[in-house]
Length: 239
Image (cartoon, rainbow, N blue to C red; front, side, top):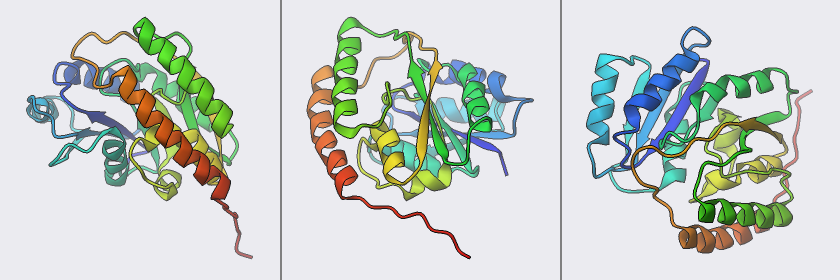
């Protein structure tokens, strides 16, 4: 059984697949037993063919899961975690803006942490996005932090490390990946933010618009806030 599963959701990212796979392998080979689970969200380009070619040629660690219909990033992450074989999951965005070299930093934070810490969230201290994207993200993080009190400066970073069992116990809904610190807190555990790098996109195009994030985010915030108010989790032990 691998010690770490790296889950990468993708939609039309064919040009970003080979370089990101190479970076994941460079960061983890010889350091930890791992697998890579790519989840293709019914891409209209040849992302799946590129993944299959890379697996055959260079990456025996690679597993490929394909959605038969477009389902969104959260569902891709969720299905990747369900397919994963390791008790610990690292996630990366498929656009290459997260640096796989930061995964060992999250693993080191986990190894130094107490048993109640189940989520280690990347914190992009220097964003390499457009001005509009940076401003919208800053506003969204401020509103989310005020409403949910999740003590997390950057929930939108795709680079995260968490325990598989805890993740699969969380309530599943579309866009849940943006609220993992609050959901983990609701489940009775803690999260830690870890500063990581961030890079500009060098290939492909962003799949999100500012207004899309705004309106969906407001509806999601109300729902997660309701979950935080109404949820009650009592941790137990058998004696």
